[in-house]
Image (cartoon, rainbow, N blue to C red):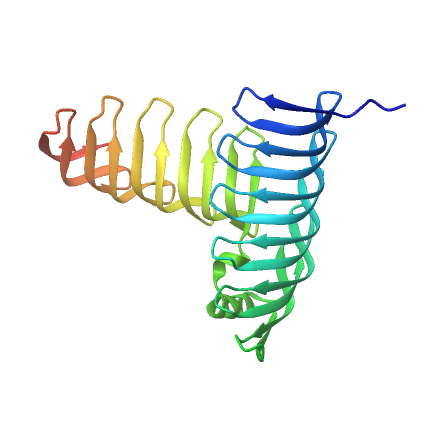
Length: 269
């Protein structure tokens, strides 16, 4: 005879909260799990994992409603973006797999095939009035480039969470197995980067927080501060200006705790 399923509310050390059914001190049955950052899953659990039908809502407003297995998107489901654009199809181990349909907020629609999360084969694009507009065969980079020139690239970018062997954690967009797009990278040592990535590197706008309390907000190039930005020190002093490959370049304004301003020339971060 199996252990009886009970109902309760649990608050975990990291601030997450579970309200629902459980068995043997594990989430099991129907419940709602709210993460510290505000993300939430409501649906079925099996042996402490998301398993069965459920709805996952991300902190930025994205939403998935469909089937899960072993904590992963797995089976039929619908993925909805903040602007109400949506994708309906199948997932296998968090990756789109097989036939799927996009319906964009602007009224456009496209049908396509996926293999391991990548668009493969024929893509059919329909205009707002429902008429077939164009067919593209995605087999090479040229086909994908044409597709992204006609439709918003955001909806073809994969999103997920990955943990490296040395304990670093990345949550965000990725393409072809590399960090690409918006994401958050948490280093095992305590540092954290939030912002844009290009081809596995910190590139574009972002913020880097050191474990010791320092923080840089601004432009990056090839993983280092480069361009306009702000460097905030532990004492509250803020350097505002242009950075050149990690170094302070040219005249900079220093904002100190009493809000007065000083000027420095050259320097090293």
